[in-house]
Amino acid sequence: MEWLAAILVPAAIGAAAGEVLLGKRLGNQALAWGATLATGPWLVEGLAGLVLSNSLAMVCHAALAHSVWAVSAAAFFLPKWLGPKWKRAKIPRGRLVAFCGLAWAVPALWQFLGVTGAQFLWPIPCPRVAMCLVAPGDAAPGILLACGLIALAPLRTKKELPKRRRRWWWGVGLAFGYLGLMAITKLLAGAGFRADLARRGMETGRFCSCPTAWNPLLWRGIAIQGEDVWLGERSVWEWPSTPMRWTVVSRGGTNLTAETDGTEAARVDAFTGGWWIRRSNKTGMWLADLRLGTHRVWGERKGMVDFRFRSAWVLEPGNAGDPLRPLRPETGGTAEQFKRLARRSFGDRAACDGLPRLAGVPGALPEILLTTD
Image (cartoon, rainbow, N blue to C red):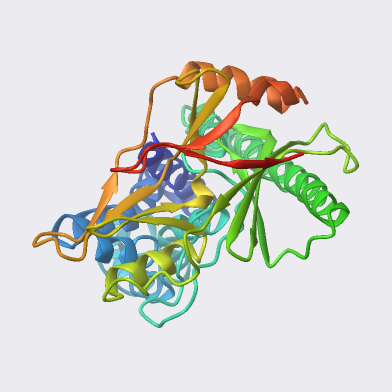
């Protein structure tokens, strides 16, 4: 459902931008056009991905059509096309340029708030920028905003414009309220993660806190400590002094390009921002993105819980086709995981207990992982 959220939320924000910039002159047409233009970057990159290799599609994701150059091109060319269509509405060119640029920029801003981020200066080599505020698949801001926009659509007369604008503010307020809640809980959880690491006397080389989809109460902490990665979860209801349990996973090395020709591996390294683990085999390696979290299954072995990373690839440099192949995420046991994480969100630490194993690595048995309390 991640693709649905990637379309729904920018479409809702684009519609809101259309309403505030062009609503008085175009009415509900402004909503429709704002939503349509805001899905443009996703459509462009989706079509490009059909003809590109997996690694090149990864490079272009949230970059090719999300860059400042793409936004500038949209602001320059789209008014030339839309201006004649709306000639009777007598829309000032400056307002039309602002509408086209803002509607096209909305997906980039949404990607920036997410976990994987956006590369605003593509193709200039530069890191992706991400706030890690909203998890992939979390469409809550878009749904809240869409409710306000749907409510204002029946109000079409000039007499109803004030009421129409109030409903617009209600939708925008609810969406920004959710994002504000996510920002506050991120700060609280992050403080707890860092406090626990400090009590252990550990100097964190790199650390980030990532959200759980549709759940502002539970956050995941990722800390890179040399050759190891520490993974933990924390509820915002827990005090910073509350001890927590970390799962320790070996990264499998610090240089991702050491065992390959470097091209595809370097692209994965750039896309993940260095937040990866790997396991080597005879034909290449298995790679996983730490930021997207894990799918967990309890009971495969008594007292154990299997971790499968939601975003993973198989890299086979000798493959005559595409060397990089994404793996489909595990979906079994979703209901049980939801129940356990819901209990964990309210401070029930025992809800997710179990000896952790790294599973889902092709050609390898599950790997027992260390834990530290």
